Image (cartoon, rainbow, N blue to C red; front, side, top):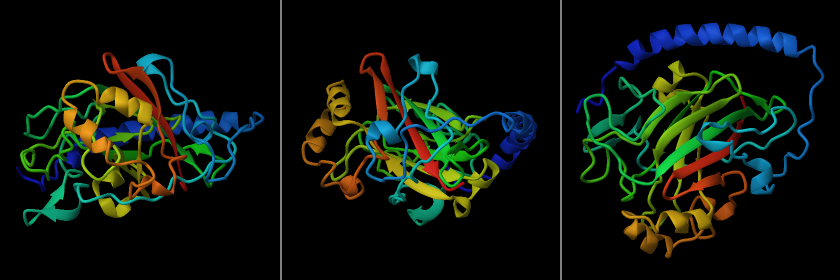
Length: 288
């Protein structure tokens, strides 16, 4: 598989035109909104020890809802975390070759279950919708429109596409999305498994725009989020997650090398069930 395909540029040309029009409309709307009184954030605060319900997001109604965190007030920047050994963003190699999915045609997508750009694999597992809202911690917690998030995670067997034995020819469970005018975006995926030594988690990088997401040098935040233990136990009772049950029993948030210092800003809110699938929501504050 060619890991140096620069087809993303052609994918982005139309998106840039549409984004420019959308940003112009947004500027008109914001100009009008500036004449209205601002609503206080009400609960937020800058304490990093805030509860998950205060710093996280509330689930929308059904699978089409959006994150509803207020966009004025104060919020705390999500912690910077390691991208881990499997980012596929051009910052490391596997088998002597640079691994970079960000410059592959088709990486900008909402459904990340299938491989793309010539690869044909499909990740199996409990359905999961991930809804994130990007907020500007240095700008009264306002929504960040037109930014981009590159998101990736392991499959239900704990394997990372492009790196793990057996799936190096796949690039599934990786994708880039642009935030809308309210700072929201969503990914359709499967619930990640638990592999030995880590609590289940999802990686992501934040970029100033979709165009700049083509190079990891432009990322402004790298972080991770996790899930409530009750949800993990429920998910891993489903078919295909047997190994996750064993691995989860040997780790905890307190002993995890990323979440040991707390999860208040990185604990997603979850609705749903293992039969119909889950929806997780999280507000992510960065310095925009």
